[in-house]
Length: 220
Ligand code: AMP
Image 1: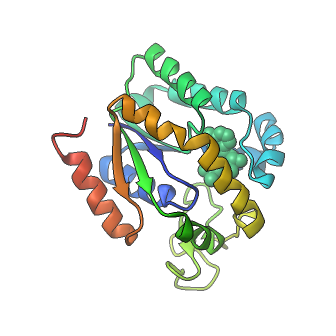
Image 2: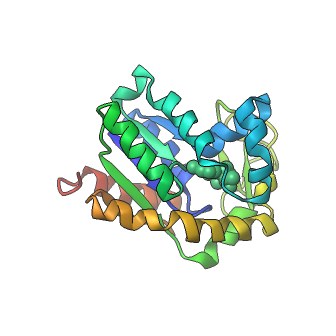
């Protein structure tokens, strides 16, 4: 399966992608995680990206396109992958199309996790993430607290509150999503690839209904 996830910040893409990657044995490529790792490592891409990320803006397309060109060209990706957070605008979507054509790979489905705006802000500002790149588990102070406050249940690393998960930056990220990323829903609907999943239920319920849809013979 070669899947792509769409959904606003806070829709639950990260959580659902991790569950699905495990269930279907797919490689999960999260643009946000890759960029945060690049920032941490101080690579050229990371240095370029940081200022944009801190303000909640999109990082320039060429940085993302180069990053995904390199990732998607790896032989281990041939067996299946999940793209999470890329593409985020039409320019990136068109570049991804040409790249996949060149690599002789096509997307199986595009999952759109639907959530209303009201719940997104509360979900994001309460989010706490594990900074360990081998783990990257996501918690929420109210909806999914870790067993021990501030510590990752999975790997015991201290959890962090991402700078761009703070209230003022979240507003900006949501408006960037509406303006630049939402048009991709129609782009992929027209290609007959869109699978819409209600992202408002408990994560386990969301996962169950997503699996049902993906396993249905009507879904490409
Ligand atoms: P995320 O963790 O997916 O919410 O991404 C965090 C931040 O990384 C975003 O607010 C953007 O600044 C940047 N980012 C992630 N993916 C992309 C992308 N496809 N294009 C441009 N910027 C991105």
